[in-house]
Image (cartoon, rainbow, N blue to C red; front, side):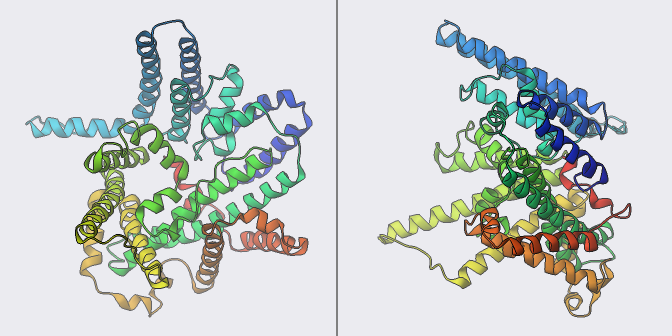
Length: 502
């Protein structure tokens, strides 16, 4: 069930109305039923995997809690805790690996076999990837690790824990919630508040605006070029890649915003997954602002356990590269995703080495304090460089494979078709002048709001501090724009959210 579908338009109001009508003590059961119904809308069989991951992590969490209270010596306790943590990790990562990486593993095995002289052809492996499996498994594993670390108590109520894993607004594409945030709220559900309904509704409308007016319209240009890049070489690829950066941001940010809005109408606050990432002045800052819940997950459960930055610069940068390689692999079983992750890690390593060498030189020269001037020119330049570096990685992310990405880079470097910026060639990419203007105006609105957010302002509070007439006009305009200029119908294949495939 898609957020931008008629099915959800019918499902959500019913779910919300019943939620507030029924007694408070059974609301979590209703939400659990709604969540499984929502998820089974794609394929009822998927619910079996969701339930299996939930059951395993619940049982392991309860056992870890029991072990913590046993009167054992510390060594015995640690051994048993590590065993049950390993059980949870192996089963859940095994499920994820089977559905997501079987094809890659088979290709590697047969490639190695051919390398050693075996005459074999690689068989086709067609395993349908369950929607959102990477998200809910990581959320469930985060809970198990938190219980193992004694950062939280294991949840005793299985149904309430099952709701934590399957909560429908953020089930299939995040944000990846922590038990300390979401599970704690599910234990104490809030009473009806009109301001939550209104604020949630505004967030849902803005999320639909990002998705249907910007992301799906930009996708037409991106799909045209990336689907036939040999016909559209050089600067066409540059334009399409820059637009893909906007597309994936508005698509994913749109989903997260709708998820936050839907949860807020029920009095539940989800983490804000994006914080104006394209205003970042470095790749490191970009990753503090992009997909915040996943970045935090890898930081807390991979990077820091590997040693983080506690063991010198070389080990720190090694840990960083490993973390980003795993992040790339999390997105998909392909060399292009791994390359995307590696480049994002490499850019940060290069920046760290640069800063270390600069600091060494400054120290040797006896300069006590050195700070680059924070001028408008420097800020703009650093943001443009960061955006360009990020876009260079998005090319690998969007291309159908690493080999195609390299050919596209070669096309960019060898072609000199700069005139397409001036001869209206861009309007041959599927979006005519009228819709292109609407699309660009919508993107400008996005960046104005993001700039406000980048400055640390609370958008919702600022919006509701305005005159009620201004609020009504703003929301009415957004709804009208979505209706008039949003992408609808079967011809827009990109209407499904990009991160559903991960």
